[in-house]
Image 1 (tube, helix red, strand yellow):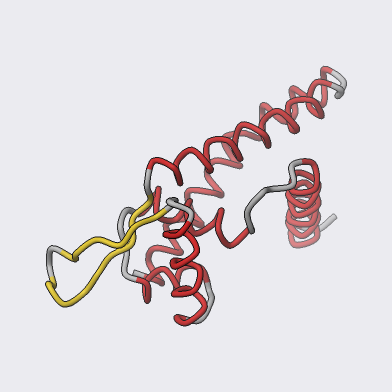
Image 2 (tube, rainbow, N blue to C red; image 1 turned 45 degrees about the horizontal axis):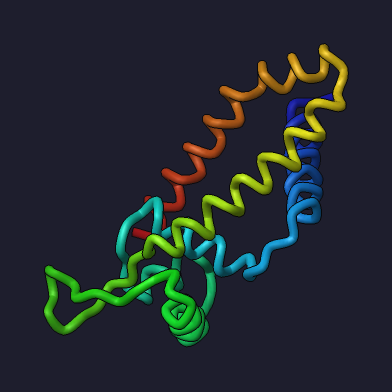
Length: 148
């Protein structure tokens, strides 16, 4: 295989894994809720416009989502300390709990699958961890660089 075909095969495999993991752990909340809470957890309080950019949805759509998050106690609006006219959205302890439960559910589902693998396949996954972590870190840096 060529390098491009190898990379495409890896990308397709990761995509199938992500879709499988999503199906193993249906969430009581939407994917948009999970990704928005994760953004708030990892990037701190943000303006709705910044959240909309990061989540690739319209500002009115993000406003609706933030209203739902607030009503569920998962996020709250706070004053922007740099601009008294603006507000920021931040995750609450309830939102942190939602994310922690989702992560625990996914980890359990993935762990069950990993435990069914042969020893050599588990070793291959362990060997791939640094590359996976590097990929995630690089994508996070790129997203912050283009959105913030």
